[in-house]
Amino acid sequence: MKRRFLLMGFMVLIMLTAGCSSHKRFHSTDMPDPQAFNAHFGDMDTNGDDLVNWEEFESYFENTEQKVFDAVDMNQDSSIDHDEWHAFKAAHGLKHHE
Image 1 (cartoon, one colour):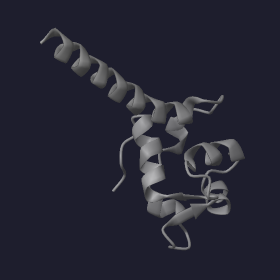
Image 2 (image 1 turned 30 degrees about the vertical axis):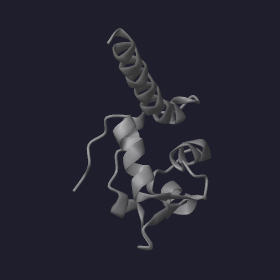
Image 3 (image 1 turned 180 degrees about the vertical axis):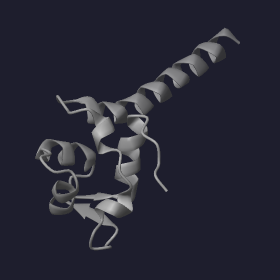
Image 4 (image 1 turned 90 degrees about the vertical axis):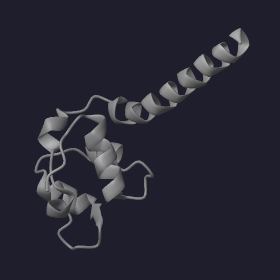
């Protein structure tokens, strides 16, 4: 019984650590205030391809740095998809815009 309890506690610890590690990606470098990046994905995606490339991101968020875009682009494919954008927003407690 005690062994099972310890094993369950260890599993919960592993799950919590794994969940928090994804949030570290957005905090690993000195970044500007995330509140300034609370935008609706569709407003940034000006060409309607369901991806936001650097040019669209920079156009929407004037004077932003490439490192912000790179931090949101989790799979490093040079574009931000809807899931990446909402993962970034969720990591910072930003609300979804309708």
